Length: 375
Image 1 (spheres, rainbow, N blue to C red):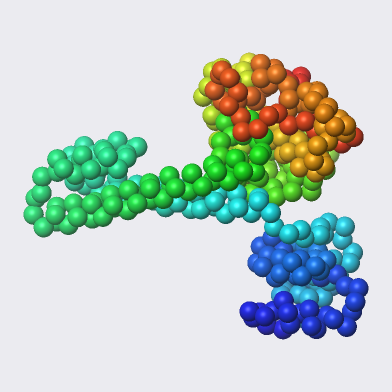
Image 2 (image 1 turned 90 degrees about the vertical axis):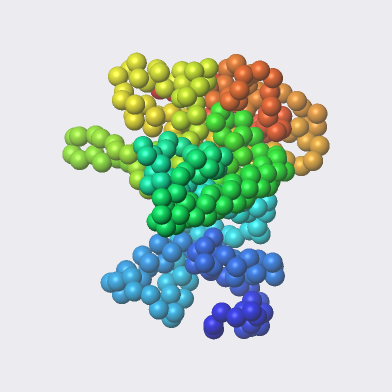
């Protein structure tokens, strides 16, 4: 059956002969997202089959991972039947809004950087001695006003630079608009991830949008393995060794990296104190940075876990399972002075929501105030 505007209706008519049915969609978070969401909206049970699982089935069955429609359908069905890693697909929620605007901001930032580099290259050909590497639209306009033309070549370069300047201003305006929409979406989500030092609306939108459901990570170690902050073991024989992981979600890894760099740049942050502690222990800058990124990953997981616990709690029920229980015993509710990864600016709290309070019956997230004791 080919893809068409009425694909969901056609599939439901075809499957009506089986009253009890479960759908298996390969890559329900990627290319198969639209079909999976259409089936979920129709009340169907849909399982998300990772492409790697289906490829392994084809490899074991035929000795290669070649793809065609009949073999794909069979391998996806076998993977859904035999693997416990296939998770049910849920209807899309507010996290998709965060992912959309975070991706838009990321695309605009890349386009702006490309235009700025091209504008800088043209200005270096017009101005003796060149210009500084970091250049804004206002600086570029000031430079162009002082440029003296020398023939048709110089005029062509100046006209090209003016066009790049126009593109830069347009992208700056689009970036500001995307920032506003992303910040509004983050506020509407009520997340506490922004309480982690260095995690602003852009990084929070990236993390939440890509994680989607934190409950798919049983522990903070699983989350660290997913975002690439957990090391990869390369032991052999009696030699135990680990190395930097290049796997995992690189977008989340980049967001955590930017938060770590922000913490190191602020001498008053707990993250900077932790970084200095690792340097004093003899670690290099890169190794100390990796340790800090892992701590930020654990802190972000604790916030995500607390947010998910709070969202799943019935309205009016306190964090202890009883109405009106306002205890602050959780990691997210610890005093700002004791948070290793507290808010980025000193002074009164400026968070979007009060500190999250996970339910007592749930597994307790890692205590942020005890992170200094873990290493």
